[in-house]
Image (cartoon, rainbow, N blue to C red):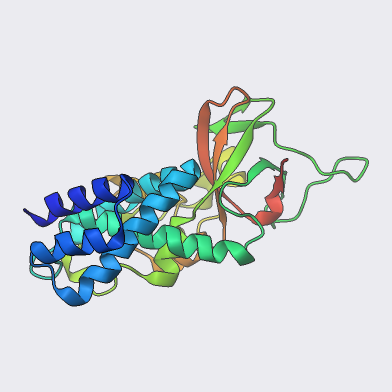
Length: 263
């Protein structure tokens, strides 16, 4: 059995309810080093339990896998990493979810929290109406245009930048990078006022790009991956926004002051 086939089999058995001892025995039969089997087996059991009790956690796992997969493929070297790029991304996603859920205990906006957006100015201060009440964002911007969307709400997602900044999973593999870059420097005036107001301000001229994690290879090959920018994003709350009928409309990075929890 290849390592990928073994991982697929272990995942199936864990979801079916097999114990860590059974999974460990299978790995030993496939010549997996004995000092690793117990932890790997327990990781699969924990993953299966989380999947069974929490659909949100499962969707986070799948999302994190998709986020990390392009970078894993770019830096993967079979001489340095003993699993496939696909399995490496899954392993990383499990670690990310565990880390983010542990971090949840001290976070004001936990993963899965339902929120609505509050208007803030360019300095991160609340925008108040004539009665000194908070003003809510009832629509969204797309390509510089504003679309009314009454009933718009968001769900807090695990922030992949937090994992990048705190765990640094790709440290040591920089020599394998090809075109892992973020967008070229642009002047502030090149951003439309609408896009600039409702996205994180650029750091040292970098434009905020939502799909940097989804497909980093698609961005312009101009500068190396910037950890200062990642540190900046890691402090923000990452939200999937929905229209009132549940249709996904956008993802965004927001300071916690710009979000209010909904029941």
